Image: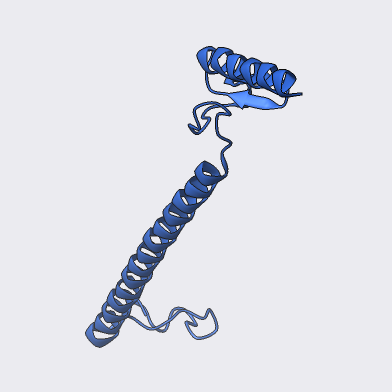
Length: 120
């Protein structure tokens, strides 16, 4: 309360009483418990974030595999076409992976057409 307890009205001024050792220890223990809870929450949040990242990575891998399976194939050699559609070769209703496949398939189609004309 100070050196002059009669000089001021401490109760009217709402000045709290001086801290005792037991009150200080209680505050320190409360602060320790609070820090421990915060550390536990951070640990749980980190674990959840790691788990979410693993799930997202698995989903991304599954989506990539699905897109790979859905990728069109070359009409001549049967290889999967990779990259954007601008790098593919198109002729008639066919899609090719390279210019060589375009030429080979053109020859095959020409030969088939010639055989069909001879049979008819």
